[in-house]
Amino acid sequence: MTNDAEKAGGPTPAVASRRDRYARGKALRKASPREKHGDFAGRHERDPVAILAETDPSRIARLLHIRYARMTASPFAFLRGAAAVMAADLIGEPKAGAPVQGCGDCHLMNFGAFPSPEDNVLFDINDFDETLPNVDFTFDLKRLAASVAVAAQAGGFSDRKARAVAASAAAAYRRHVQDLAVLSPLEIWHSRIDLPAQIASFSDPRLSQKLRAMLMKVGPELDRDDNFPHLVASSKGVARIADRDETIFHLGAADSGVSIDAEKTFARYLSTLSPERAAILSRYALVDFAFKVVGVGSVGTFCAIGLFMSGDSEPLFLQIKEALHSVLERIAPSSAWTADQGLRVVEGQRILQAASDVFLGWVDDPATNRQFYVRQLKNRHLGSVSELLEGEALPAYARLCGRTLARAHARSGDPAVIAGYLGKSEAFDDAMASFAMRYAKQTKQDHAALVAARGVQPPAEKARKKQAAKPAA
Image 1 (cartoon, rainbow, N blue to C red):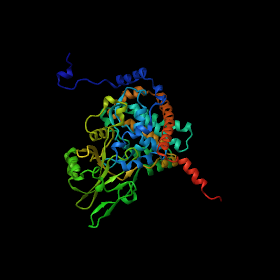
Image 2 (cartoon, rainbow, N blue to C red):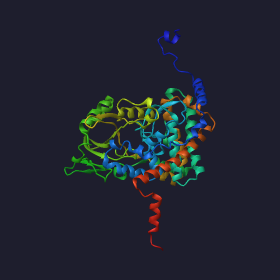
Image 3 (cartoon, rainbow, N blue to C red):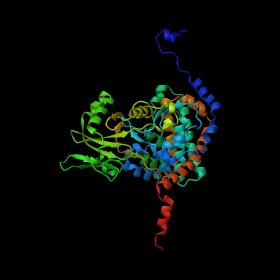
Image 4 (cartoon, rainbow, N blue to C red):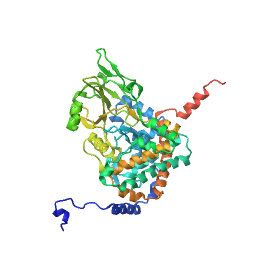
């Protein structure tokens, strides 16, 4: 039967009303009760160290010690680098039945402050290496809640308080999804997490000031930011990237099997940009190229920075980062990505992030069989977990991350269905908190297993011996 819309050549009524979609989400609770998300028995047959080692052969061997040194530093550092381990643990765990574009590595330190093209300061997800479409929304939220619990325990919070902070992050997600569910699709797409406005809403002015200082770090001079490459002049007076120990360095003859042809690679990358953005980049020239070790879980993958200069010596840094298969394919093998992995990251970022980088693109390197995504490297970064804990800002920050994840999920998923599943009670928040505490315990055990496997002295033991070695007063 043909309806009036089809006769007029207009769109067919292919989508249900918000009320119907909310009811559909509520009905999902029958097959997957919200309380069941609090369960986590652990998969005792799995070996976290072996899971981490699965990608070692594809990584640069001489950098692996940095990866494991960073991961053995603390349980939270382990969690950051162990997205693959958590993905393996979530196989078979309860699903709500509401798919979204998954971030895949949604921990506390994977958020940050960014300038939009209009130069507004936005708060958003930062890293999309593991992004994958059609993944249940609960997986990202479980990783976020677990990271909150692990960070809180690292800061000396009692188990009761750590649990409460994890629950508050889940509650912030649930409430913001409820707010988004009543908006039109366009209103959802254009929604933002405006950082100055969010910070101004905090009731404690001292907390607002502390968070502002941490979340809006913008180094006016490059040499004030240790996370950003410094520039030096070569013998011919040409600007180049300064080497810095093992974290930023120029590849040499010994790296012939690792390096790529930067000129040709960036030239191919240009074809993935829209014409107006390619036009901007055409006003810069590549003058230097150096390797840059980043993050925790990414250490050992190919990540480098290209220094581009305008005719008036104005620098532009582009980061080229290797894209491997998403760890989420463990959980959702039917969503396995068969196209270019760099394209996967780019598309995922454009879906999840409110305002993506104008230079975001992808490219492959046939010589090394690597696939990459490219983005602008900026000297704006987030403070550390220790700063959040010292300022007692963790609860507010956790809630901010929860709201941000809700906004990201609402762009690809159906917020009305998710809102219907979550409901207005605290049942789901409580389940997430229970899961977070159970997974925090698992993370401590996995961290200890890695420390033992690497023959590393545990931090507590190291501190004890250092204290014992001090001369008596």
